[in-house]
Image (cartoon, rainbow, N blue to C red; front, side, top):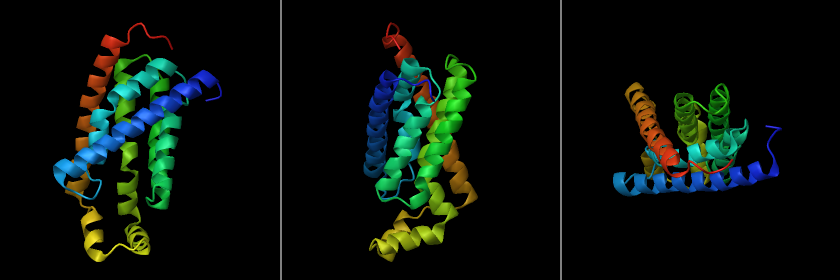
Length: 195
């Protein structure tokens, strides 16, 4: 991370903002299409939409720390936007793992970068994971914010094996599709772009 220069940090800032926008669009689409007030489909839709941003980030930095910083930015957003206090941890952790995976092949391997993107995409599970891990504290936080039981029952995603398996699988599939599409667009339209 110490090899990042000012130019790299500006690039990371731009792609963090773009990633935030694609994630917000994913949340919006989930709310409109599935008519749900919880974020059950947000990680999958974000993974489907954000591949181009992720692979442009890699193409334009190819340095350890870039992916991690985007994860920290998104995690910080979770923290300051009223999500449960520890929701930022998965975002930061999955981003760090994704960064380490991509670094193993110096950010040059299509397959390894795709695997990295799949791992990174699980970072958006932060609010949902904490809902499962600390359900009572999560509910207490919603009550503290003035939410009633009807709202809480609609927001809480049940921790059941079939639900968890389904969500993990859907995020993986959407990340692979979004990642392949992102790699294709970046390779086709950004061949001559300098780092």
